[in-house]
Amino acid sequence: MTADVTNALPAVVMVFGYALLTALATGLGALPFLFVQSVSDRVVAYANAIAAGLMMGASFGLVSEGTHYGRLDTLGGAVIGVVFILVTQRLLEDHDEEALVFGAATGESARKMWLMLIVMTVHSFSEGVAVGVSFGGGATLATLITAAIAIHNIPEGVAITAVLRPQGIGIARSAGWGVVSSLPQPVMAVPAFLFVDAFRPALPWGLGFAAGAMLFMVLVELLPEAFDRGHRAAVATLTTASIIAMVLFQRLL
Image (cartoon, rainbow, N blue to C red):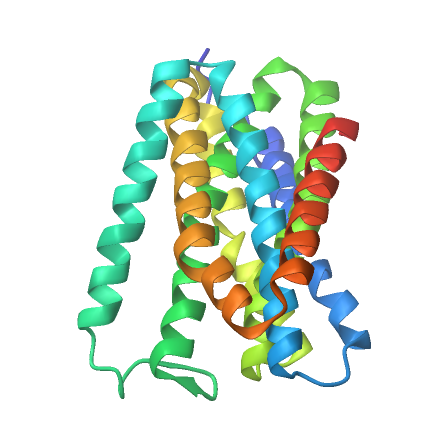
């Protein structure tokens, strides 16, 4: 099905508005950090553990959803996601370390923050497509899917803030970066709605890509630093609890 662009303007505005709400919901993930008073090495470790668990749980959900559209396509997307992270890491490492800046952070800290935002932003493209495609199944289905993605975006905002906040980024700016990382959702939702038949086959590739990229980043960036800075048992416990919480959360949706 391809929507009639001329007659679909009111629907396009609604699709864009719904998808924009999902992006804004990501900023709510910064709110729990209002209650974190100090940022020690241990706080950094445990924040990374929580972020890792949430991202791994989200990745499992993405793979599960992607296989409904195509198993091999989802696997192919995951492999491309891993390659994307490897290439992005190489490009950031080759960048002049003194010139690599994120807020007050420079060098390795700035590199990790940029990598986190790049991964989460790319991940948002597939969520935007999912919102747009869902409108092809009617307003009721679209409302449910949009609400689910919006609620799902809140813990993703937590994961983003968990990486940014320990590096000196304020609550408001962390929330803002969370919203920015999700802006591809309204951008992609409209064309996916208008040209749903063309976008639907890309969904498993996009979902797999996001899952592969997030899982690889967790394993090579977040967890190693968490284990270096915190107690291993505590890091493992927080990561495991976060994975289970995210999976159960997605099941409830």
